[in-house]
Image (cartoon, rainbow, N blue to C red; front, top):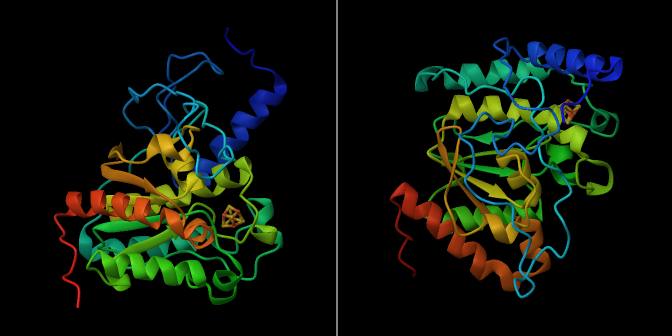
Length: 279
Ligand code: SF4
């Protein structure tokens, strides 16, 4: 059934369009679907997924032991479109423009507790991008993503792939630290993630590795147990997206490092990388 256009819904739509215009997104279209109807074509503007949303099988482990906290993106008013290709020489400036657009952002409640906006780290010409959930205390203090213990583990993962941290690009779904390192609320993630989409469109990495359920859910626009996302290559905004565990989770449960390495090997295969020889 179509959802009636109530004054509240009209106001919400207007506010959302205003927000996207703030981000520089001005081309909108209306899809012929009923609002609120199941819509496999998520707000990311990607090809419709052919995958069914299947619950975790009874004997299939859900390593997080919990449902991802970010719900599916519903078809709303204006999905962020994939941006025009930015020439490699102009990517640093284009990223700087996005950072300037963010400014001293107060668009969501996370601004209240942050010390520093954590934009990104790494090469604007990276072939590989990592996307995490949000800054923690160390990141909030230093203004860089993945610089605490989880960041050290991510550095080790990057080294194991035969790369250096300076060669990849690292960003998060939200750019301000959630209080107490809680999972970002859906409205916070949805408010901040268009900046991430713009960063992805500028960098145009060949491969994106989503670290954890929050990153996977926000990028792929569907709520699924992490186990359902792993082990496959997903098409996303012109990149190949692979899902693995967040390094903070691996610190809590090191037994899953083997599984994470299997995921990284999928990324390496897509990049044509071979693991460096040991010793
Ligand atoms: Fe702005 Fe993102 Fe920070 Fe929210 S998390 S205040 S949208 S920069």
